[in-house]
Length: 261
Length: 247
Image 1 (cartoon, each protein chain N blue to C red):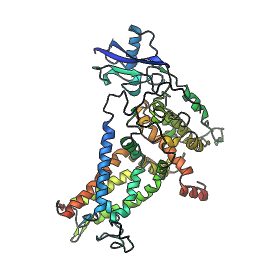
Image 2: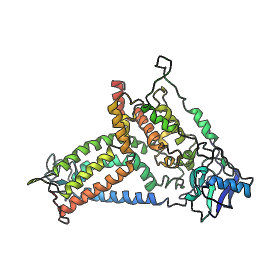
Image 3: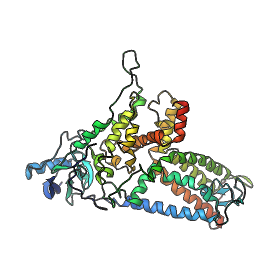
Image 4: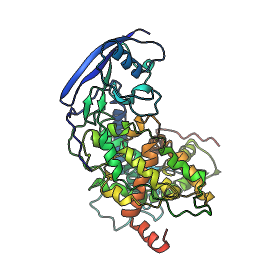
């Protein structure tokens, strides 16, 4: 392509003629994602107070190995290296974590909030060099669809956890925690099933959808969720954290789970 | 409405600066009306490009209070007139004079993209049959008026000036329009990856934010193209699947 003659380069970090509060959105994203990262790391390394009654924290689900009755393969395995701290969350949290890290919405949001690339639209950047997502390490963002596959599998486990939260030692029952875990699956479902990669897989990869009514309906459904992908992303993120807080505080005896039915 | 001050960039390729003009405003005015009034009253040599005054020709692109917008679609009652309204030319492109920029780089880029290549007609009358549901997607992209506001706001061009490596959101939309067309047989994915720099887009959605036609540039054009590039070059499982099934 032919070069362009750009005579004036009046950029510079934060330089803009914008008069609105352009810094507010990236600041809120920085605070929101930063707080979640801190909390998720803290919670993942605790290794206790992640289950109570029929409830299991979504940050520890599926519990592959662990001390709780929810563990699929029993207690901590013997082969676990003694120098590594053990927590059931560390075995599973990487998958939903990387699903969010490689998500198209979050990418745009954290490039702005954490890397100021750019700080916001029409606002000057701190660096002159730029690689984008076409070279290492950001070219790895292209694996997003693989983490989507994991996220869909996890949805089944979380739905199973919500189902198990209906069954108490004395039979069927609904506690506030049951509603918390059920809403968690719904929000995560809205987020994962409305993902851009999902939209591509179910129909976006084709130029002609009219010959496949089921595929067309799936594409329209995913597109509908995708239009509010940012909202689903934030609601599901905050609710995962709240679900963990809820189960944790019930387990610690700080909160009392109110039994509705 | 009362008097309002407009701080308009005056100058050319060699340099320039802002100059304040005060003019009377009235109900229903847009920024382009005010600029024309200033031309008539106090600055007959003020250069501004415009045509339709209806948001359809894409000529009057500028930056109003720092945001890329069409002057003819920016109503004064949406601006704070208690302080001077800044009007400057698009930053990304070379300045010609005052509010007029040289956008000819875009025309050159367009010639590099493989043209629409319809497959062999499949109807008896020598034409094609398409279902409306299948052309809904590319039709959204045909709303583009080529105002180049998206090119102007894209930080890959605006801040990093990677004009040789990246074609910008407008031409990713142009490519998506053809790639998703049911009768197009062209393949632009290799060029999108290597020559046109689709990997340089980091999805900040600024192009979508400024589009006066409200085309969902990032969600409906760029990301689907990125996913098609992943299919072709970054997904070994998909590659294997394609090898065995041919789909």
